[in-house]
Image (cartoon, rainbow, N blue to C red; front, top):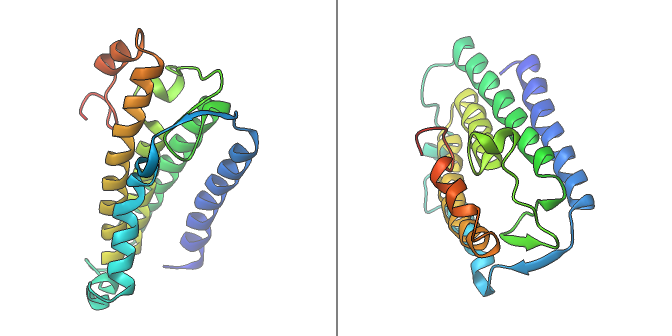
Length: 190
């Protein structure tokens, strides 16, 4: 991958990290968290996956192996997906505002956000991050990209279940209807 692509990918992910860092500083205080170990549950697939890599249970040759011939088309498509995903995640993060948290929890005076990207999917931050990871993996052209995508998808599946339970408890009148109308991750599909 040449300097242009490396710089473009680094910029997309760097801006995303800066928005997240700013969000941590402005988030509302926590009112209620998912109980016990459940707040860590979403991260178990990622932790297990990385442990398998580090303990060399998964062969490094597969993880570093190129999945297809290097091509400007793959790199360009990957960059476009990464930028689209990062932009979508940032839009969702900004729209969520001070209600955001990195773990399943309810904030003080929590609001149910159903505008902006939340009209399209209930978990647009995850949609954007998965798209960005898929794009980076596509351009990076290694088994590691595929592994990270699968582990992140599994983690978000767990996290969505916990968050949905908290939202139903917090907004019993409005969240079930929102949940029926709007898909979780992919508009009109999933």
